Image (cartoon, rainbow, N blue to C red):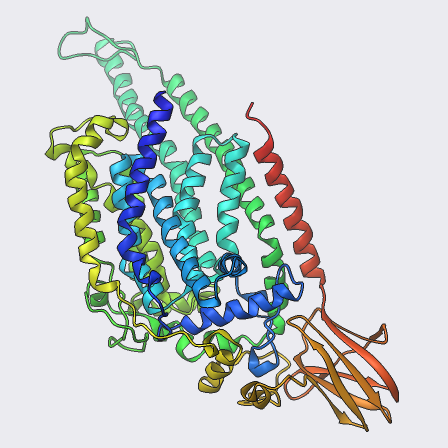
Amino acid sequence: MTRISSTRNVLTWLGLLLALTIPAWAALLAPGYFFGAHDAHHSVFYLVEFDAAIRDGAWWPRWGPDHAMGYGYPFWVVYAPFAYYVAEAFHLLGLGFTAAVKDTFLLAFLLSAAGMFLLVRRWWGDAAGLIAGLLYTYAPYHLVNIYVRAALAEFWAMVWFPWILLAWERLLEKPGDRRRLALAALSLAALFISHTVAMLFFTPWLVAYLLYRLLLPLARRRLAYLPWRRAAAGERLKSRLVGVPPGVHLRGRDAGSTRRVNPAARRDAWRSDLRAVVRAAQSLLAAGLLAVGLAAIFLFPLLAEQRYIGQAVWVRNSYQVETNLIYFHQLFSTSWGFGYSVAGPDDGMSFQLGLAPLLLAVGGVGYSVRRRGQHRGLLAFFLLTTVIIAGMMLVPAAAVWQWLPLGDLIQFPWRLLTLTALALAIMGGASVQILAVAIGDERRDVDHASAAETNRRPAVFVLALFIIIASAAFLQPQWTPITARDESPLAIMDFEMEHPDMIGVMQGTQQPFEETPLLAQYLAGEPLQKAAIIEGAGTVTMLAHGARSGRLRVDAATPVQLVYYTYNFPGWTLTANGRPLEIITRPPYGLIGFELPAGTHLVTLRMGTTPARRAGDIVSGLSLLIVVLLLWRKRK
């Protein structure tokens, strides 16, 4: 009954938290969409491309057929797809493309709040979990990510941060628990296939956190041992001077009362702790490797095949790190806007840490320092990393970014605000300890004292109201109507015509372009003629064109050379009348070329597999099987 009551209490607090998040996502229930947000069109037309690939039989899409003005692009090789699987599920249930994206954002709101609640309640109770969940939900950058940037994938990366910490904390508690190991691996793998850039900066942060959690108890034991070593040296001196045996403490001037200290026992305890740390580290390493294995279906092709893709489009111009460093005052400025990040201090968007997160985090940390609150070591880590991360976003850190491996791939250093939002929410949750003092219920077991939680509820609700009101001005997007063009490949054409410098290219692309033979067909709404004869006489008839395949009939009066208006990329295969054809990369854009003799030919183009994709599929399949076995096996 106690367990049932506890579960009911947790669900009550969680339900209250989710209800209090309604103002954050209520705008998503309105008609229309905020297509003026930075990536709003992207978030929808990416889903259009993803859906086309799924319907063409690609259960794990690799190719976006309409990118690069119809030449296509291996978008899903470099872009983590998890959020679009969620959106595709909503779309297959009957929602339109934009509605599916909006519901995917909404689900992310709920899951991120729930994850933060479950994480923080472990340390400071349900009330702290509620406050932390609200701080995370209403964190300014969290709201920037949806209503200013419409960055769906990064928004989902923030979902996994608290869930990862929760899963890995539970694994630290019981390193030998196979189910906890499997869940830790699943949580981290979910991040890996949700947002590549977040993976690059969150993983080192997580490693630092786990090392801190592993070594902190060991350091405390060692520090407790060091004073004894100094005292032991003093005892040996006393034994020589006054004849007191080593290991006996004098109390005042009376040697009649003694207490023996056993140095061997202390050393044994420290060594036992060291062995426990090693065992825990082994479990953490196993979970990390399993996470990589689960995500191998995405990671292996990403690492092996990105060299065939032109990288400059991802790191130049507005994507340069140096252009997007911010100034110290911007961390505290309450200004809000829907513009872009630019060089200098006059950005059109907000990079603030937030009034409520800052005040409550200061309260939580300040209380723990002054009153020796619970889990001070954790708060010290979150405070230290927040300061370091905030410094990394500032202009003086430019030299550090040039030194960092893969630093250019981060693109926007202010993306690290995702981590500060996480840390500030956790530290802010700790502020409920102050309420325990205010109501005279400061007890060491306050985490699990339901009476204390009840007494604190009015004050907690006041804090919750403060958090919501402090962010109220950031909850209104710039609404625009939804048109059929927004939910079609024409949205890609519009974007690429407006921003030709952002058209994706291959390494084999020798010169940029601003139009293709397919562009006029897209704009006119005509069926796409994806292939053409460039030398010889004959006709080409398109029979079918999908996201990862195409079929055509070639009636060649003479030997012919043809171009298929699609980038050549590993995995493409060509057959003519069932026989393999050699693919020739056609300059200057790196398109698929091939040759045929005179006669009638049925030509099929299909995106197949590669060694990296095959290896990723196998490793992910085996890793998933391991996870199933770990979850299925009963605890011993």
